[in-house]
Every structure is written in structure tokens, then in C-alpha cells.
Image 1 (cartoon, rainbow, N blue to C red):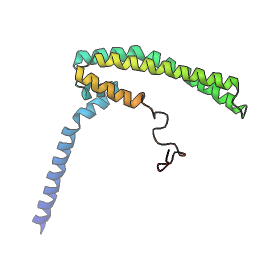
Image 2 (tube, helix red, strand yellow; image 1 turned 90 degrees about the vertical axis):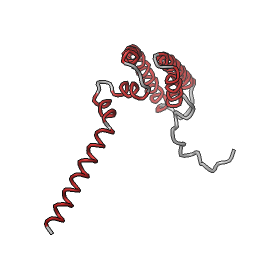
Image 3 (cartoon, one colour; image 1 turned 60 degrees about the vertical axis):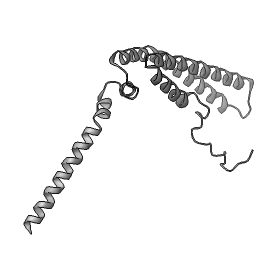
Image 4 (cartoon, rainbow, N blue to C red; image 1 turned 135 degrees about the vertical axis):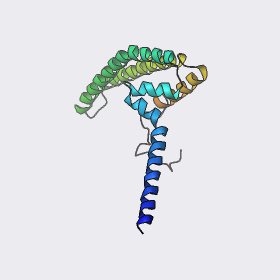
Amino acid sequence: MKRHWFIALAGLGVALAAYTGVYFAGTAAQRSVEKSDQPALAWLQLEYQLSDAQYARLRQLHEAYRPECMEMCRRIDTKNAQIQELLARTNLVTPEIQQALAESAQLRTECQAAMLAHFYEVARTMPPEQGKRYLAWMQQETLMPGMMFPNPPPWASADRSP
């Protein structure tokens, strides 16, 4: 009887060791990406099979674009706060609100144009096919209609007819 327990526990131990080995071998690349100093960029290197030189250029582009992006985000946040203040003061669409909304739309347009220019520049650092795939993914994730409502808004019924 003791022998059966020993065989069962030994089998369980071997199975656990095999699972652990397969798991660690299968996730080694992802774990190294997570440990890097910039995981999102390291993921790009892995996903788009970039050489070390291409990755270094990607990092330079990212570092150069980041302050511009942060400034644009700050300006958009400031404009959003201004709009919220204006909306809290009235229950009408005033000319001041219209102007603030127009300025907000202009800021978002500038931001999208800057992002798109950055995406094109990054794509040029990649092999052509990978660059095309990157651009398609970035455009879908950041510039396509529906960004404001990734899920349908509550008032948009799925069975609604035009």
C-alpha cells in the first residue's frame, strides 16, 4: 500500500516539475519583456521582430515624442476642466461654451495629427511588412471612430433601426 502512495506522489511530483518547466520555458520571452525598463517598447521589439538597432531607434523616437505628447495631454486636460467649469455655471449652450468646445476639438485634432506622424516615423524604423502591421494596429487602437465609446453608449440599443 505504501508503494502505491509513493508511486502516486512521485508521479504527481514529476507532473508538477514538467508543468513548471514547460510554463517557464513558454513564458520566458514575456517575462523578460515585463522586467525591462520600458515594457511597452520591449513588447514592440518582440512583437515586430526588431533588431537591436531598430529597437534603439524606436527608443529614441519614443523619448523625443514623449514630452510633446505629455504637453498635449496637459493642454487637453486643462481645456476639459475649463469646459466642465463652464457647463457647471449654466444649463444653456453659450457662445463661450461653443468656443471652448471648438478649441477642444482643435486640440484633439492636433494631438491625433502628432500621434499619426509619430506612428509613421516609428513604422519607418521597422521592416516594411512589420511597419504596415504596426500602423494598422495603431490606427485601429487610437484613431478610428468609436474611440470615445469603445462600448456602445447606454442609449444606443443594438436592435435600433435607422
